[in-house]
Image (cartoon, rainbow, N blue to C red; front, side, top):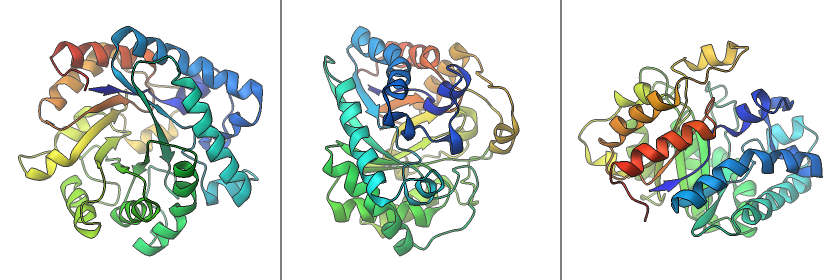
Length: 300
């Protein structure tokens, strides 16, 4: 079982009091003060990795480092390439001294991650995401992952872009409280369509930015479930709309969340990566790690 971190952006905003325009963490890489904030965020996770000896994945702070969001923040194509490169180098530095660790090049959706908004075609999505995927891969990311996908075509395009670049990839969907993608598609259909349209070239699929209780109803006994290799849940049971409108962080209960993870993972035999998402911090990931490792799901 491999571990990763919790909710980077929510922790920076609510715990460190850092302003993140457009929920973007990548500009913090531009100066030493920002990098110090990122190091402070990662410190307890790295300590957990050392304590447990579990395989650990360090994500790049690049969820918003793509063309549309970059343009809003004053980053042109060259600046985005540079910051994606720097993000991989920074993440690699964080892994130094760990027994077993990898760097995940994080890609975010063209939209905001909670609602579908304007849907791209598969070709548009491949063209849109390819530059960031190429930058992350060239900088040495072990694999790339598109997080909080709300509709199928964007996932297909991303996987095709990663295949074209020649870097392993994971596609991670988000779901609403009914277990369906914000587009209304079932998780099963999303996984099966992406695999069909990409010849199964993704390493696997994840779900992130949803509470385990919201995800549980999406899983059945189909063979597709074995393609789900990771889960990063929210601490809160709020819907995405409620989270968007919330002015305070809902951290939930770390121990309760850990038990919900354990129940969910018993139904997901291929899950090999666990961490948190919005509202979670090192307390939640520590509780999750203790629960899943204690249940015999050892690291590889």
